[in-house]
Length: 635
Image (cartoon, rainbow, N blue to C red):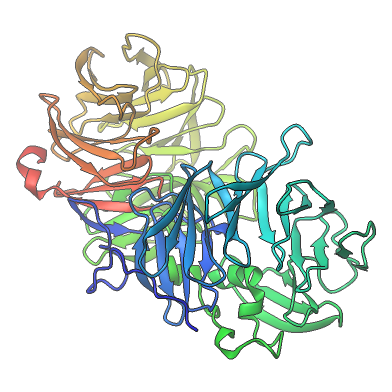
């Protein structure tokens, strides 16, 4: 019988992609579907393979397996999904988030059956009869087994004080529910589900129960042998050594035969371990949804492994690549920039490179420097020169700063190699005029380069802790910086000398810093307020107090005319949506407040004509806000 179809929450029928689903008031579109960390715990597949879900930082996306089309969007009130799983009968779904809230929802109606307050969770798994769930903490070394009927904790497994291990990364019941296994650190532990007292410990991170509940297969981390243990025995029943065909991801077929999956660079191999026979070679992107689902649900995805797998469960997870599901993924931290004509919006891409979004169609059009893992990027004011702090690719640890001509993206026009241990560059700003750009290092210094002369010009020293914010004046002559050393400083770009410190009543960190378009005002976001200073004599012009529950104004952006300032807040406990506020620079009046991202607002950018405001969030989305109702104030 087919599993129930999920309640179609937030669906906009004419929008088949989801760009306008569950948009907050005042937003025109959403770019990206939320950051997804490619963990097994963030993907769930209905037991019959008809539907699957992906938990992202902005919500829970439902998809139809056969078409790979989105069909619902849940949990947008808070987002930050950390774990999802279906009950074996497909009627319920468990959803956990970063706040430690776990909701058991009826799939068909969406009704919340049970809500559990626990802690930030990594794994949730149902017992085979759907009556219990086991929950694993991400940060604490603890597992709990709960009875869903009455909410009672049946057993608790806690390692605190026993041995130094990391958080739990895998969790599963035996087919008869009597045992529970979890991977913690490099070991796998097994307990009776109702007592919480460990009965066995195996070296290794990948395990699987046999269908008859008598055996557990586990791959060791050290010599990468695959051991098959019988419960109650102190020695493994079978050992498959490194010289054998497989080393990772074991699973038992429905017939009880031991199989395993081996990851290669571009393929996944499926082996019958007992017969030492290779069954499949699948050409895959290693971070695709297909790869993840095959490793997590091999019995559903590998149709040739077992002749007795029901036909409706065969080939359900084939040919599903992450980029075709979530679209171009927005990196959760970093800058966003409009092109000079306002037709494109640029942001960092999770897989590497920089994505160019078409503002009108709200679709990704192009990726620049696709193979380069980008840490930070910035544009020169003429819109065609781009500086990027990055690794050349993920396999090369050499840190490099590249300068590119956007119209000629095949090769950089300048390269600056960075000493890996001392000068990793995490934030870059361009001089609006000339050929210079600045970047912060990890050693509390600032560096200035001339990309045409291909040389590093200055090393600005004075800060004594991590540099949080940088901004260059419109004339390119001065640089402002804020640091964790609780000072904000102004520098001469030409000489590299410090001009002054910005006045603070008491030491505090300037989280965001910006020059106004005319260069006469410097805005700084500190705890509890935004301050406006005169860029000419460093005097304080105005304080703009922030609401008590929104103390940190991290992201700042001036409107093109300079009469308005936008600020975005960091998440604080108890908040569900982050505030993006428009301020009148002359009076300090709050013109309007938008509420949208589920967590920290990382970056803000006005379109060149001032009619759009783009906000980039730690949730991995960009929201486009309509400023036309406020055009008279913001332009």
